[in-house]
Length: 177
Length: 109
Image (spheres, rainbow over the protein chains, first blue to last red):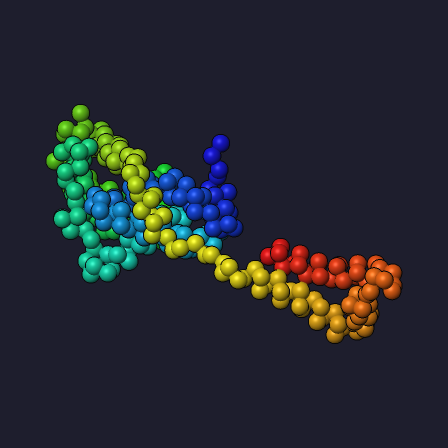
């Protein structure tokens, strides 16, 4: 049986066990990179840079993890903060069209349009939708990650979905069949 | 209305579908390569700690009230001559206890 996150964290903290930390990274990398890819609208290179920064910050702040929330929730919160800082540094939202990777092989035209529609969402709306739909987080956990009230999260999701629905209206007859 | 609901469901489905597992492909190695180097203790750290602990034990006990007994023990051990006097078992045991305690404390680290 593979060790739990808590056991791996204890080993990493008590003995500076790099192998334990690498197991944690391997275990959570897909979720963190996936979230950041959504936040950066499919810009894989940028998302992976931010994901690396996320895990480095997690390593430095591992003692600050109190175990109250799931480790994934804690990591996603760091990832979101790293993303916000990155967008502030770039002096724009990072949502430019160049950030979208339309060549993703698994994208149908509809998915391609969805990716572009996501670009138009505010970062908080995109993050709320990415976390709530893709990462199996409850709305309470999303609120903790985004550091905002539960009601705000619900509003972000509702507004975001409304915008997406409008942007994808052209597909409505097709997707409804 | 039905179409709108179906569209909504399809949208939810699409949003969930786009969450696919991402293969590691060397990502973890990149992260591990960027971690700060592990903290390594100086090679002199242990001997210095050990010596300091032993010295502190001895000095502390000599200066403590009742340290006269330890001084006497040290004197007896130092002045032991095999041909002239019996082995000072008790003083030796006390000395070993004091020094051993200091060493154990330092080695435990």
